[in-house]
Structure formats: structure tokens, C-alpha cells
Amino acid sequence: MAAASPDRPAARVAVAAGRVVDALSTAAMAVSAVATALMAALITVEVIGRSVFRVSTLVSDEMSGYLLVVLTFFGLADSLRSDSFIRVAFVYDRLSGARARRWLDGALLLAALGYTGFLAYHFWAFVAESYRFGTTSIYFTGTPLWIPQLFMAAGTSLLLLAIVAGLVRRLVTPTDRA
Image 1 (cartoon, rainbow, N blue to C red):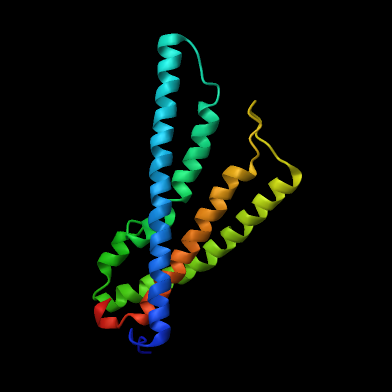
Image 2 (cartoon, rainbow, N blue to C red):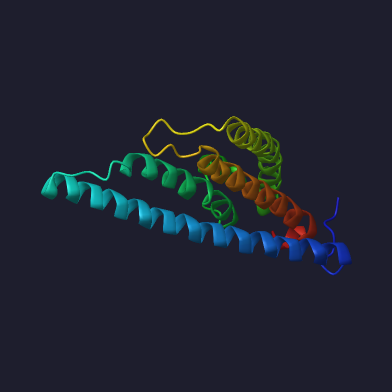
């Protein structure tokens, strides 16, 4: 089956939608970078506080965990977009030609679409349940757990959009330019 021409109206819409997903992925990666910096700062303050002043923030473990969730889940879509997502290189190395790699990428994206869709659905259900029941952390902060869980659901949903965008790109990009 031949790929759609990028000059067709549907292809232009798909390309524009892909650019929106790319922009969202880049923004999420920026949030991930900020979370990384905040986590490093929080751990540094905790280490200095405990080592030098014999005091603790009492929240560094909890907040670092939440920031780890943010940096992980908000980095997923951009990692996929920039081809730095997890790959089994020895399989790709054994494939001859761009067409075979393109088909394998498409098949893997379809599998990822199903799995990520399943995860996104259940993460959103998890957020709703935590919100409905008022679930809070076991720490003295009593952080409502729907807040960090929201980052899991949003990051997974953005990854889902990036997967769809990747599949659409494969459909609208001619095979010889793969």
C-alpha cells in the first residue's frame, strides 16, 4: 500500500497535528528538566542540612519521589520523538534496508499504542479514584496522591499522542524518505 501524498489535505492536517504533539513533547521535556534540577537541589539541601547543620527538610524523600515521577513520565514522549527511546539494536542491525526497519517500527508502534492506551486509561482511572476517595501520602505533608498520579496519566497520554503521531508520519511520508 502506497503512503499518502504529503500534499493531500488530510496529510497536511496530520503533519500540523504532529507538530503540535512535537511542541507538547518539547514542553513536557522542559518540565522534566526543571523537575530534575529541583530534585537535585532538594537532595543537595537535604545532604548539606543533615551533614553540616544536623537538620532535615523532612520532605526530601517524598518530594524527590514525586519529582522523579514527573521527570520520568514527562520525558517519555520527547524520548520517543527524538529516537532515544528504548530499542533493541541487535534486531535493527540484522535488518537490511530502510523499508524493513520502517515496517518493524510501525509494528512496534502499533504494539506500543495498545499497551500505552491501556496504561493511560488505567492511570486516569487511578487519578479519579484517588481524588474521589481523598487518598493522601503517608508522610506528614498529607499530599493528595492524585497530584503526582496526574503527572503519570498526563505523561502517558502525551506518549500515546506521540505514538499516534509517529504512526501517522509513517502513513503520510513516502517510503523512500523513511
